[in-house]
Image (cartoon, rainbow, N blue to C red; front, side, top):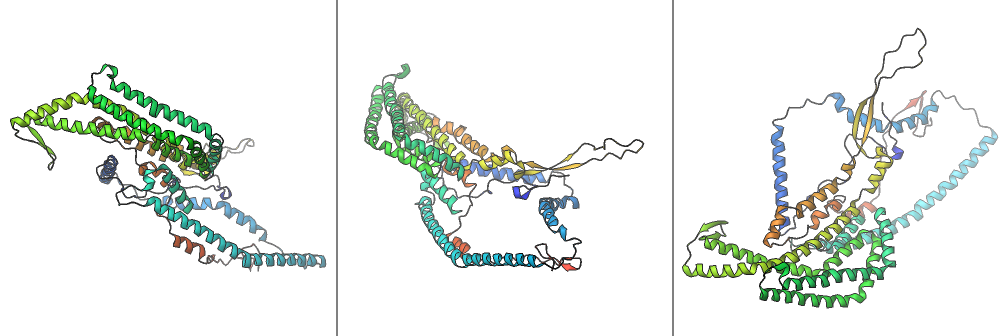
Length: 549
């Protein structure tokens, strides 16, 4: 027993779950050697190789499965026949009237007049259709092809600009800017979006209508948190914060330096304030290309307006890292040891008295200056982590908008048979005939096996999102990141190649070229010859229209 799938409703049965994303595509590594992302990528490749080797070894210790039986091998063919059963039923119903059909009588005069009028109408319609297909359609087709190829050339040129790298190991423009990343994704999708367009129209209309109010909110928020509040924190750090005894001269020097940069940055923001409503209006206008475009522009705008915090973090982290490395080297000097750079190990070393004395003085000086540097570094590191977290939220929202399985989710709720996730056999209850006549023997009970299509699970539909969450957690919440923060090493945001692999999983690994597109559009298509079957009924041959010759 089975429920016949309806092909006109795009229902079918499949042994394997439907794949919403394309296969894995190998991508060239673009991380800098020795960076955090490069080390994570090496560890991931190493773990994959180790897992693959363990699986290969495990195969030698598993029980050998029995070879598939003929019924198991025929299961795929049976599934294909079940998928074709609806068309087969329609074909049989279309030709069932030909079975045992009697010969027709000769037509009367009125029937011949009707047949002639019908033939004349068909002739006129055929002439009109032929004139359209011979003269009008080729012109429209050529114009459409030329326009499509022109758009394709412009898109290819923009893609080359977005993917250009000064050197093979350098980052491209799409890897730096979220806006460039969104433009590149849109162009790739064009080379090959109703949900995003609908949300984009609503969001764009709201931003355009309230551009002045949105600009004022952004101005007040950024001015309060990135200039006023940050300046107050720096002033507080200059004067024994939380009762800590800091070096007054170093704290005053660092505080005055940061306050001077904040003051000049506020002047730059003041010059930008008059054109901020027009900039917000442009961001709202860009949402007509999809809801992800204004979010990407806001992400880049946030990076630009918080550039001074990024520079503070880089400067304080570099100073703290240098001081930390020098203190470690001087500590090894006290132990009579030295770090061997070539062999990457700690070896014994004999130092003179003047070297030990100078090392002791420098160690004491740097050790007492360390708390002053640490408080400034922790302040800007926490601020930088907050900005990175906000950008990670925006980038995650971009990934969700670009790859949200809305169509698959609607199909799963509306008609789950259009998203098969496998098959299942169910043993139904024994069927018995009710109201049996008196004295008649009851038939033996009959059991039925129900052949059921299992819909795709929600976890499989959102599998890419689980991978994205795992990558974000692995990048930001890991011992390596905590070690980088503790030692003053730079903690970069998650690379866009890892973050946007969710979008690129829906795009082909290799983009078709312009010439391939031109050849595919202009080459003449030869109709495929249908297989010929010599079918006869009552001694006469049948054609494909259900008529006899």
